[in-house]
Length: 310
Image 1: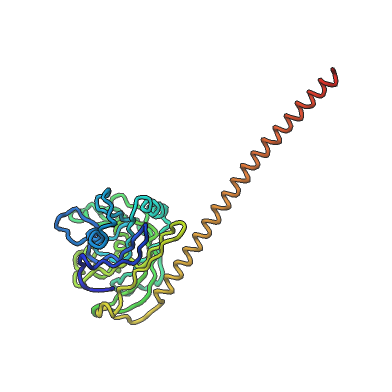
Image 2: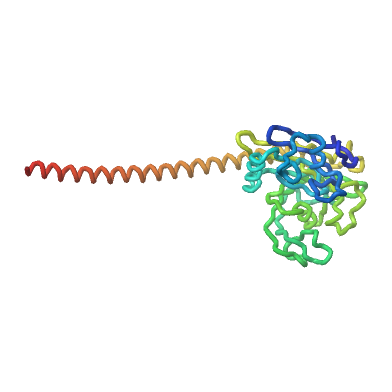
């Protein structure tokens, strides 16, 4: 249930559960795991509290997290319940076949309704900023790597009287702090992002970034989970939508349809490559057979000639 209340051990929200995976709706401002004794409230602590029988003693934290969410980010987080399941999910993330979509409230009104944010991101080596990332070309940016995010505007409105834009963000790569850095780079930082507002955006009760959708193309059954929408006036009365451009349901539906079409195309190309490879192998086998047959005919002719001579 969406709430503005802080996390507790009992506030774990489970979105999906099977023999291999649990998907939880991670609370805002809670770490996934921690080795610090004073970190009492973490997702792994919540899982141990709710599912002590599922904890794996062979792992440090008891549970295998398939991916990461920032401390300040809420939403869908997938946990594997065994090593084999973790491996299957890891391959999907490694091959970039996982679809993730985030909801966010951004400062200001974003004029361009759909856009691809394409800024390489690297580690910030500047004094006092080593916990941050930065875009290529900025001072102290080390080892920047290519990074893309699709942005789609959903609504324009006000948050606590200030103009904000509600957007859907789809990361096409998986860099640290990618969405936060990209939004800041276009002049529209995420509401409540203390770190990437130089410590000025500290009024909201949380950072307004939420992992709304998670699709992992596992075989034979894909995992598809939605973590709802916490950015509603019913949850936070400070958010006042004024003009809607497109609905979340339709936007996510179109995203998934596009992804499925891409997956179908990839599978078709793989089948075509496999067919051509099989034809090539078959051709090689037939050629070898023909060569062997010709050699056999020649040998038979020699035997017949010798026999006729006798």
